[in-house]
Image (cartoon, rainbow, N blue to C red; front, side, top):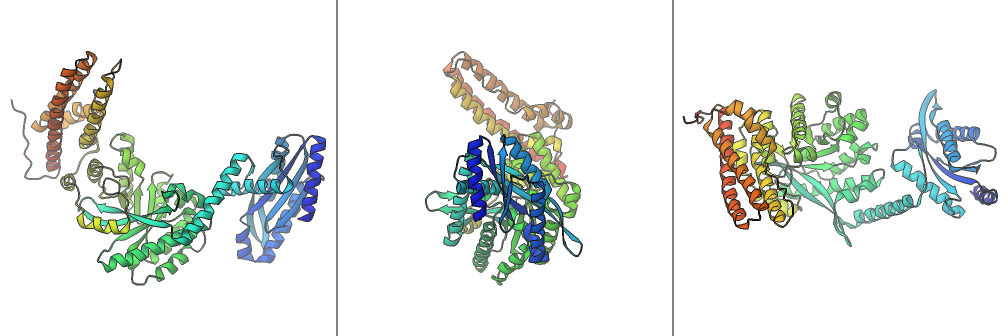
Length: 563
């Protein structure tokens, strides 16, 4: 290190005199620790000697290569005419390092490297700061994929400092009990039974208040603190379940595992040790939730972990399904128990036909592979009705309950009753082509709120543009598929007629708005309110009639239109 510091000072002085560039490069080997762990330190030392030889082979006579500890090297690239020369030289060095190394008895280890660089005098810092900046740039590479290099910049430095500060605060928070768990229920919509919950972490920061996980978990993407936090969550869930079971509450709780933790060797052993701390809690009370993207990143290893978890009696769910690139082959190879449909598809499926098709496809896949399926993001009764008609009975979301603290969750359990409309959907079957009918009420409420808001705001506008089409998908359905299939039903005709009345009144309302006839607009508003209620009543009756018809109930009678 003393020799390196001396050469760095000389190189900086030379760069100033010559008006050229000096690159301070910090290189760290990727995958070196497993070599030490598997083959022993002598094998690791031989590998480091070979790395140094390869670096010397590609370095110029004016460059300096120094190993500063462990598997870290610093290279000084001097006399560079422009920054692009630095990039070329570093890429050449990384290519030389990366590859196979003989380690023991003819066996080989694959090694890559990550590098960060500070460019003097663009970065006009002192020698120690240049080294620190290069180290920070290298650390940023480690955090974002490894195997390449990055120049230091000021913005990156600010992010690095903020990252390190947050990391330190997380460590303090774990030790001082600042984290807490909120529980969001999972329900069987068809039976109304609460079947489980998902534990969701919150940071009760002493200065910033309650912080959601999206604001702090990304800091732990490549950090051993992820293990500490996950183990805290597991212990707290099991502690809470011990209390609940003593009170007669027996529910499976889903625990999200940070991707870094699941990929770190020994996950199942750590899980087993935590489980053993709570011998009175049922073995099957935990469900491990893995992100789809995590599972696909290392398929064989994750499949083995899932098998080991299930051998312990711990079930495994594939979370946020649909956001990755899982193929049928992947689904066949991953022995997970439950597939969780990502909330983004569920939330928008009432408005977006493509999202609806994706949700239906995922439900079909789960049945084909004999997996349980649960929908996240159920925000309304209409979402639940649609999902049950698709064949998905399990759900969670704000339409059922928001995440809540354990005491509030226990109280909520005592009073929960499913929406009345879910009872009528519970035994219903439907064709996908009829989806606009079963989302009609949800869409109409949304349109009515939007339309009346537009009318109020456009009263003083110069060019009114209120939307008079309540539901384009429903309108298309009622004039095409619906008319063809159900045109002989009296209730269908009533529904179509009442929809036409709503649209006619909305159109008249806009015309009176253009004429600035406030009195007639108010009259139309009253009429529109009544017509909307009538329309929604007919929609509900038609839905019930089609349900009865589909399940062959004796209650169903085919009523033809009068005349």
